[in-house]
Image (tube, rainbow, N blue to C red; front, side, top):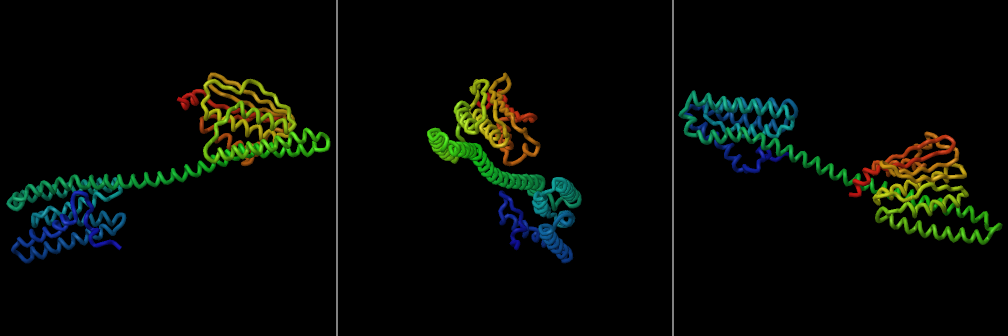
Length: 375
């Protein structure tokens, strides 16, 4: 429920007591008249004004402008009949609360025009009534001109502050979601790889138990070591993204391909010139995911990994001789390709896929951008 005092304009430089004076002051001007008819007309105009003012707060859309028009007419009548111009302050304060830019400027212009016009006419009709209060009239005109803008831009600023606060809350929520997705991708890329390696080595150990027990024992030892590494990496990922070197990742990749009984060929050196940590970390994650996909989905028996650097890009190529990749396989959630693309987009890199007799993945990261990030 709206409180009775909510009809008073909220202004930082005018208190509710000042507005109360503005409400009572017109009766002083009215009762100066000797004619009872004039007094009755004056009281009726004041009551109509505050009734219109009250309705203007409760109305919506076009009715607001109708009540404002009534207020302007009453303000003109009070100015010409009794020399009371101060009701224009009330109307000016309400105009400052209009949110529509077009509506604000139209009503603001009309109010200024009618107020100044009524005052100028009053000076010509009965100068003795207006001249003694000239200083107060001048202050009222200045207030009528400035108050709407003050309130309009204050409300606009509060509106923007509210939107900014909402945007901050949304950004905080999105940061949480992004962090969860990052952790999910990291767990998929690290833990998924290790579990795949454990599964391959377990199958291999199972085959070797009867044929070559000693080699089976070594594979079981590797499984234990891989499980320990996986546990360590998961703990690191919970706190922050772990910086991974390409040279270290290549050792694990060789283990995966060897356990999958796939031939591996390495061309070039996994050492890039002036590469920042974040770029090398992304490349390592993408390389690990690409090789995991080769083992899981290619059904091939060989994999070739190429490292090379151009003046513009760091490039890693992963090629296999498997069945190739279909369009549906490229976009499937389980393939890990989407996660690779998301990581590369973060540093303005890209993933190119060629499929025919086997699949070729080209992981590209621009040199210029990574140099900027490094600085």
